[in-house]
Amino acid sequence: MAIRCAILDDYQNVALKVADWGKVKDRVEIKVFQEHLGGSEKVIAALQGFQIIVAMRERTAFPKTVLDALPDLKLLITTGMRNASIDTEAAKARGVTVCGTGTFGNPTSGVAIGLMLELTRRIGYENARLRAGASWQTTIGLDLEGMTLGILGLGKLGTRTANIAKAFGMKVVAWSQNLTAEKCREAGVDYATKDDLFRQSDFITVHVVLSGRTRGLIGAAELGLMKPTAFLINTSRGPIIDEAALIAALRQRKIAGAGLDVFDVEPLPLDHPFRTMDNVVITPHLGYVSEQNYRRYFGDAVENIRGFLDGKPVRVLS
Image (tube, rainbow, N blue to C red; front, top):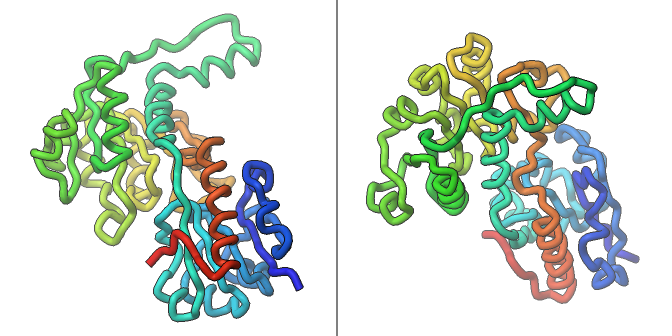
């Protein structure tokens, strides 16, 4: 009897096309779920009888309650080597092996810069106008050169974003809870205190990992320090910013705007205020969604399954 494998949240229906699943098809029966399953009860109902699950980042959560309700599950794979929505301790206690995958490049940095460009140069907006029959331009853009970019989190993605911003002629400052002035010097950016970063930046971009310390890191107080001409960019995780405080700041024009690729609830509800606000640019969590990244994700997932079937699991997350 074949082992059943579920591939979740394959919105673009590409998982089976970007990797060689022939390496495991002799022993594995694969079912692709293109639509998001929804809350825990729906996840539990849909995934009964599956021994292997391939999850796309944090699109579907696997807390203890879900893991305990999936008695057949033996292997849980997440794309990437970190997934805060999987209770790895509960998985270990249940005897479920959790594996990750590699990644390719730094596609999130490109999305962060793209959101900045859309907010300042309105490329997508003007494209839509021309296609709709408008005669010519109506906006006057802002040049990024000479502006100050404040980066929250100077890890791999933050550093890559800083390097791109410097190529545009921007001044870059950075802060995070563990960041030092020495680390900033090594990256070629200036160190700032948290309050100073919010006060002086024309753009603030978030590149910290969601954790207990960073949840709600940006709230009404921080937004209140920003210039009324400043923009906030978030390509990390929605809950790092207090969503209600951000909506209030945008509605009251306390800041100029926001570029958001991540949200508290994903997919973003159809009635969400962000969908109708004229000073917000929103994208559907595109940060990690690149063809090269997907080929790496699902290629490694196939290797993970083959290794598990052979009794030699690889990329096991502790």
